[in-house]
Every structure is written in structure tokens, then in C-alpha cells.
Image (cartoon, rainbow, N blue to C red; front, side, top):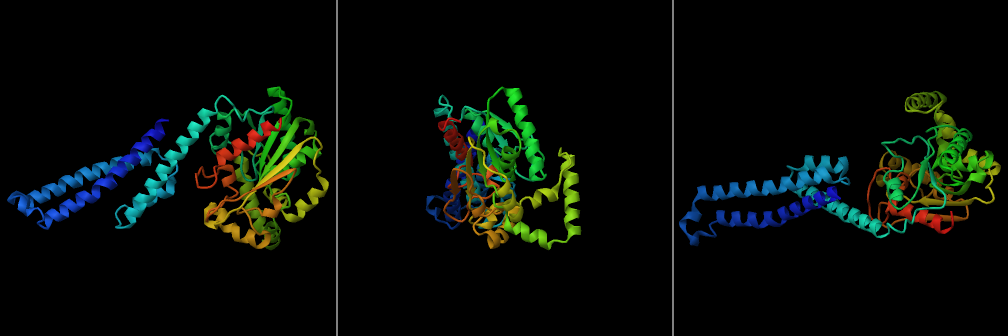
Length: 393
């Protein structure tokens, strides 16, 4: 891939800068101190030393800025944060060395990670491990929609398709009551069945989308057309902190926030969005009631996945703010949903990584398009779908 080749070249140039700048600097310092005076009077000439200094500065700047500009232009993992910090710290002693290390490490790790991923996909290209018997329907969570150029699932769909998967999207409202979302998904399932001619679908649903699909399976007529349901970080037993907040926030403020959200959501494609209905359906009280009403459908394979965020700051805004509140009420969590709320179905997997970072609610849908040690979100979904294929779905 051309981008990765250029990024690797930029990293190598920056490494060359690191390797050459120290001996060049030592040479100039020793020359200035008269270390080479025995080699001839020319070397003792201040004007000649200044000329050498100018030459070294020009060459090292060319090397440095060539590498930095190439890396800035080709790396995706640097993001806005490291690019801005790199510019701000560029003229600050010590800090600029730290930032150079961070930038070089981040870009080099990206090159190695992405190159390994491409090679792995090429090696198994003929196997098509994600080519399931039935297509995959991806169902988003609350406060998001399926957009063509801003995929809710980040880099995951591209990776699944590269390994043979056929994908569809829920395309339902970003914020509605669970029952209303279930009706929307019923229409979407029948639309896909009619257009594609497939017999059934495998559903992978994130967050509230898992509640929406469980309800659709139980309360609508789509059950015969669904082979499996995999819920990702879904609050099956609700969020106790939501009960607390909704009980504390004054009605007027709730209505103000709801009105603002509903107006924005409508402008982006929602039909009669209902912010408060969506939020209230995530409370522990309402989820407990729903679990008594909504029963699993025989013949449909149910499984679930959850994850644990170790360091709140890694959850990014606003999960870094909600983490402690969720922890107080719900214990270990992903920044939004407590661990005890995740399990549902015949199989449950709780994802954890060592170190400070952990895996957030957003990481599970590749929200930030970020590579980090211990968890490859794209490969996780590849293996999840590959397992569905092994099970005959």
C-alpha cells in the first residue's frame, strides 16, 4: 500500500536524523573547542567553523523536515492531538525530543501493524473466513446513525468485507424508544430479505441496538429470518447511573436537552426522534421490566460480548467523565455500561487487556480508529464472524 510505504520512508528518514544529528553536533562542539587544531590552522578559523555549522544545520533540517512532513501526511494513527502537540512542542527543549519519540514510535507501530494486517488478509484471501451462510446485519446503538461517509463501525466493515463478509446496516433512528426501534428494524430486515433473496440474517448489534433487536425478535414477525444475534456491550440489565441521573435532573432541563437533540437528529435524517424515550429505556428499571416481557426466540442463537475500561482517560470524551459515575453504581464498566449488564445468551465473552488503557464502549465499534496494544478490534470482528461461519450461520 502506497501510504504505508511512504509512512515507512518518513520514519526511516526521521531515524536517519536521530542517528546523524548527535555525531554531527559532537563534531561541531569539538571543533569549536579546538580539538582538531593539530590538523591545520584552517580548522581553527572561526569563519570556517561557522560555515560548517551552517552546512550541518541545513542538511539536518532537510532530513528532519522531509521525514516529519512525510509522516504527518501519511500517518493516520497520529491523529489531530499528536500533530498539534508536535507543532507546539517543536521549539521547546527536551519536549521536542519527547514528541519526536512519540511521533516516530506511533507511526512506526502503525506501519508494522497495518503491514502485518494486509499480509494476513492476503494469506487467507482464498479461504474467505467471513463468508457466512447468511449475510451480516450491523445494528448501531443510541445517538448515532448509519452514514455512508462516517461509518459507525469504523474500519471494521472494510475488514470484514475483505475477508468475504456480506454486510447490511440497520439504518434506523438514532434515538427512539426500544419498541419503536424494533418496528423500524422489522421493516429493514424484510427489505433486505426481499432485495437480496437471502433466507436469514446474522445480526451484530452494539449498545442499545442489542435491546432493539432482542425486542424485534420477540415482538415482531422477523424471528424466522434471523439466524443469530450477537450483542456488543449492550446494557441488557440497564444502567443504574441512568436511573440516578434521570431522577436528579429537573424536568425543564431534560426537556431542553431533548428538544435540542431531537431537532439536530431530525436534520440528520431521524423521523420523529425521541431523546427521552431512548434514554429512559436504558434505565435499570425499564430494562428489568423489559426482560420479563421480551423472551429469547427458540431456534435463534444468542451470544454477547462486553469489555472493561481500565483507565478513564482512555475512554475519550464523554466516557472519561461517565466512567466514575458508572463505576459507583455498576462496578467495572466500559465507560458507559457495567459488566453485570453485558451477559446474554448461550455464550458470553468479557474482553480485558493488561495495562492502564482497557477497552471502552467506543473502542468496541472502532469509534476513534485507533490501534492500541492488546486488542485488535478489526481482527476481533473477523474472528467473531468466522466463528459464526463455523457454527453454520
